Image (cartoon, rainbow, N blue to C red; front, side):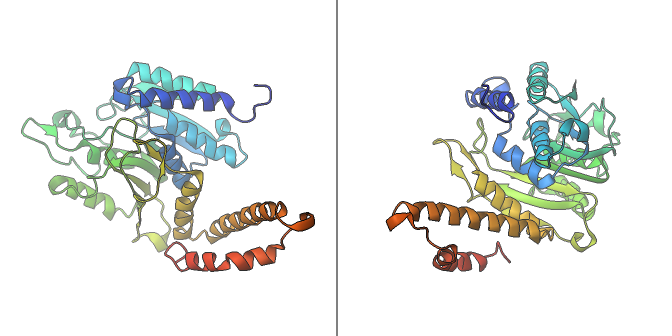
Length: 341
């Protein structure tokens, strides 16, 4: 332990949360969003400072990954970020508070059902909203919520019993309503959310017409520990640059994955970086993309030098220019694909 570096206790706690979710313990594992997806959401969203809200915070993973993003900026997340959460399960709230504590963080997490309650009163005030709301909730009482000021696009339709027929679309409207005029949101959605028809389509259309929809990423099945269904990651930005007002970046990442077990997939660190690189290019941040490619080249040269050093006479090292000449056809092929375009 004396030799350990970094956030060792936080990493240990995250590991045991993962094992807990894998055993389908506690509320069918719904409290835990895989670190791989949470990390992707946080890094696409880039929550650098201000109020962060998770209206379905579970074990608090969105807060932790947001803090990690700030730490990579060489800044103190406790000074830059303020965390607010809502969660319906008291036991899960304790898990979330412990998760924050072992990472040296604090947050105000209230027991509430987001569809009905707004104890933090943060509508229009949040800088960032990150969340993984429950899928396929269809028991929200329409009479209780129809006058809610967090419904700028109205209700997505009700069934014969007066319940909201698709609360996942309803949830996306709530996330939008929490954002301030410069706020951004990233959240997990059912893969059906982008194609549902009738009243759900009307709410989705109104959301798109705000020009705030920024990025959508399709994720394959088996990323969750207790569900095998595919999902989508939606990102909103209420302050999109004028050049992107009528554009949405849509990524099909269903063929990008790493097999952890027979039933569980995730992203490798390199896969995460490469997906992020596409969002950088979309936002005109080519310098970040070029820095990533440069890092890959330096790593390749170093590893190739180490390999040849063990095989060449008298420990001679191959010149980097020769390595680049040998590898250049591969990089040329890559550059002709859509990633560079």
